Image 1: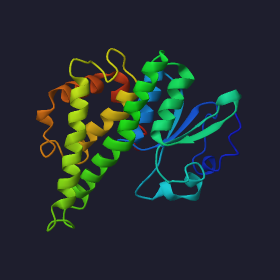
Image 2 (image 1 turned 180 degrees about the horizontal axis):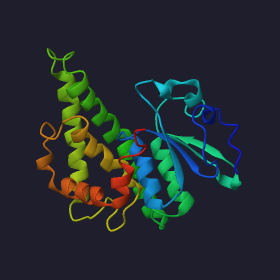
Image 3 (image 1 turned 135 degrees about the horizontal axis):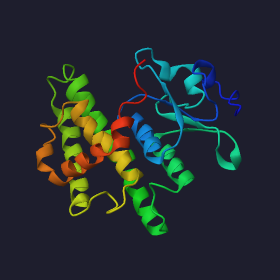
Image 4 (image 1 turned 30 degrees about the vertical axis):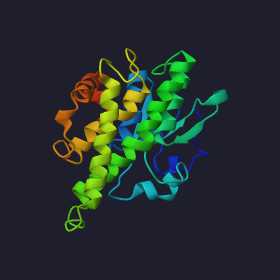
Length: 235
């Protein structure tokens, strides 16, 4: 068995099998990226549910792995050189897992960098902007009832980003064409989440982005996506 005792997070969330990748997450648009990737890659892992209600992501044990106090995070007992490694930030974890396995990432170097552009597009654009839209549209609606600017700002920017994705996906099955990659996995949970979590389908005019909607359905039809979207499961 691998020794993960140097990671304080394992004191609060003990590993049942320390030879498996340890996933610390919750089924949010960011969190499910990693569980979906792990399912697609067929990597054995042990999911640990981080309770936002209990503010567990801010606990000393969790922050010892991710100083930013955000899910997801992982420990891979078989990291570079066969040594355990702890990682945080969903985009970084996706790149790590893809490079570790040589899957969900183009083999051609130029295509690989093109794909990374789209991963960063999600990390720097779709994720933050959709998240801000959802916050003001749903969770802070009463606070901005007399000020339409926050909702309008993030609604319009979210729609602009959807239009960029729409143009990319015209006549393409996946973001990188015929190959399903971590760029798709990074992005589709946020497009789904803006509807499922934030109720933004009508406000963001999803019907006006048919290529995006068809791509989203293809993503959601994948068995690994269906399973990963539900993990870590409720106790």
